[in-house]
Length: 288
Image: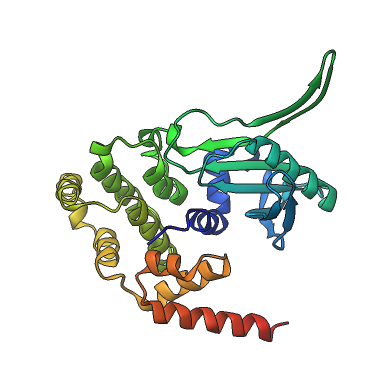
């Protein structure tokens, strides 16, 4: 079954936006009013570089601390490399800037495994003697990041995204164990715990040999004695706690994940997810 990478990342970031900002954007994390975050309505833009419509992944309006001024945080999840992507980001920026007339902080999280080369994050327009434009966004390129640098981060986004960082093949079992160890230290509600554990399991789905190495690693860490460990591993084995899983499924469907992707990350039967989707559509249509 194919993975809806962009959809999974959208749910992760929208669910844990503050934690995402604290982890990757510390320069602005200290300046925002965390209680002011407002997710703006879905925006559909015409992407002239690709000749198609583009749905903006995530756009949030936030307020500076102790001020009356706002700015926008625009996050795009990019699961494949693309020519002139920096130019596309500028086009998105200019369209949103024109629409909202607010400063915009643009961020891209690159989640593909290859290529390993650094992706461009600047778009310029220059002439001899004249620099017309220099547009830059914050680029988070996971395949160029070391998972070891995030081992001590008490952050659910770190626990999830370590699974997509630069991981040598032989280290996959160890990384999954470390993701699990970090997850057990976080105080998350059952639904969010299920989502993060499902995210990790999606990207570190181990084969039989790797699973043996994983079990040896968690035994060395002493995780088998922790209640949180038993809850997470049990969820990987039987996808337990139906109520929490259904909440994750509903949140994922609201964020635009496909039915197939929700089935993959929750383990719920296809018929159950289709039923939840129908109920969600009925609720949304009834509110219009």
